[in-house]
Length: 133
Length: 149
Image (tube, rainbow over all chains, first blue to last red; front, side, top):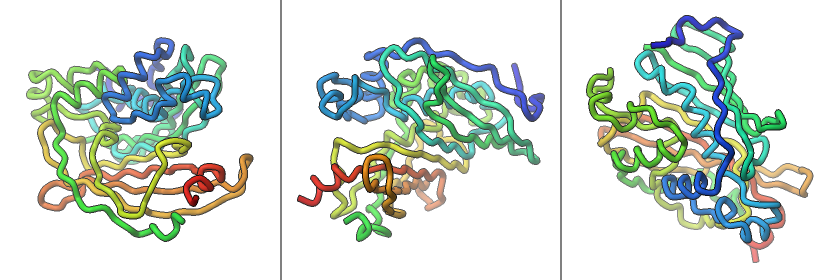
């Protein structure tokens, strides 16, 4: 099993590229989260809101990003997770999830995290404070 | 109109970290790690149970604040934070509530934007805080005008 302990400041967790965003992804997230704002699932509602098409829930992308840390559940947990939503995610966008270690203090690992689209544009960025047991 | 709501708090609502809900949520964010749904993996883990993903509290019921009327359209989610004492485990019960933390307006590209910060909490049944989270919601001038009509 891989471990975060060996990670040096400046190094990154292996990034993850998601499949192109599909409508069914967003319908599933709407159902699982209870967020049925129609700009995430219905084209006409998105257009009425002045958008070119439906956009992903910010929380869908934020939820996806957290999975970079799931494999390390035996050595610690996500104590703090803070995100600023920077850009919209549209259908068929290809999102890449990244995390790099900024600081290691005692048993706390501070990561800079971000999600970027296929054009290299940041759609979300923030920090994860991973607390090791 | 949101400034008057600052400091107001909802009454606590009991929520259960449901096994089926966690599985569905983990699948919806494309996290198929067995720690979220496989009972054996959970039992053999340090938690002796399955756990929930960090953004799962999005699914909880936090109650209502009287007089706080948010439109169901036209809001922009600006920022989001979560803070945990430990991961949530399947089957546990949490008392959840939220409060209006602050409200301010700032000039932006689309006129005077309103920033509403809501803070949510989840306590165990002994009153110990297990998680808290903040959501910053951006409300445009156009949407606020509709609200005050």
